[in-house]
Each structure stands twice: as C-alpha cells, then as structure tokens.
Length: 252
Ligand code: ZN
Ligand code: FE
Image (cartoon, rainbow, N blue to C red; front, side):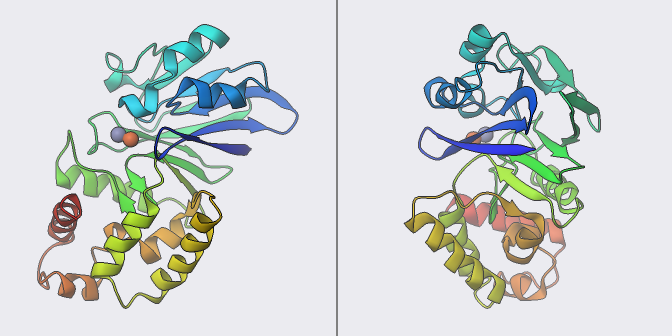
C-alpha cells in the first residue's frame, strides 16, 4: 500500500492510497479539488473517496472529484446527511474493502459526532483525521471530553508500530504545547530535532507512529505522574487530566 501525501489549503493533508500494480485508486479527506486532482489526474481514475468526518476542510473536493471520476464516497452512517455525495455508510467496527485492501472502521466521536478512523490492519496504517494529530488531538466540538478521551484510547490500543496519517500539519504548535507541560521528556526532545529538520526542508512531519505518539503526545500521556504533577492534578483521574489539557490547549 502506497500513501501519497497531498498538502491542501493552509495546513491540511489529503492522502492518495494505491497498491503497486493494482488499478484501484482512493483518496482520504480530499480538501481542495485542484491540489488533489493534480495527483489523481496521473492515474486517470479515482475509485473511492474516504471521509473521516464532515468538516469542509476534509470533504471540500468530494463533489467535484465524484463528478469527474464517478467515485464512490464512504463515510460514517451518522454523517449520511452531512458528507456531500456520500454513497456507502460505514458502521462502527465494520470491515470494508477498497480494491484488494481492507480497512476497519474505528468509531471515534468527540471532534464530531460521526468521526471515524480508517485502520488498515494488515499494513498497520491509520488515517486519524482530526482525532489524533502528531503530538496533539482535535478540538472537542460536538462530543464531550470524555468521549474524546475514550476515542483516543481506542487508537492507543492499536499495534504500536501503526503509522499515523492525520488531517493537519499542526505538529510544531503541538510540540510547543507538549514541551510546556512535559519538559523533561527526552523522547520529546529527540522528536523536536526530527520535526525541525522536516519543517526546515519543507517536508511533512507525517506519518508518525503510534509508539512515538505514546511516548511524546501529551494527550496520550494523561496517566504519567510527571504530567499530572505539572498540571497540579496529582490525584485526578486520567479523563480529568485530559480535559484540563484540552482546555489549556484551546487557549494556548
Ligand atoms: Zn475537523
Ligand atoms: Fe480539519
């Protein structure tokens, strides 16, 4: 499985998925028609459009791409009235094929009510949209903090070597936030060097791996005593720590 990264808008990523020698082409979260079509046009076809959630910066090119390539659009059954042009409604834990590839639908409400992650278990690749970012997580718009926390835990339980492809290049500002509250984390300092190198050469910091995120992403580290201490929440539950971090990040 080959994943091509397409930078869109200011800081969005869309992803083209294909397989060597196989004629099925898919895209995750097409933001902008022109940027996406520049890549898809090379293949002269687009079979499937996969949407993690209904926000405009993730579905913006759905209808134009569908019109040009007669693609099928897949999204959560909960977003059947909100994802433009949706054809196939996906349910929690469902398995679905796109060509020879199979993904699992992980239901991750919080950022939106119908947010899903596409997890390709054989390849260990997850498209996490605006739920898990590198070193961060999405804002809680439609769900509760507890839902978002539980959703992140579902992702946390995937195999550690899973590659994480998320919806935005927010890594640098997320890094600054993590450093503010997890300043002694040596993995974070290593990651900082990697991130700077990538950004200095104009390259995406994506993909990350789940293992790296568990070691460095403060939103996946609500159980770590040093972080609880830094927040003055020594005796609080993990979900309370998560809520505090999310509020602090909203104002960061
Ligand atoms: Zn969003
Ligand atoms: Fe977004």
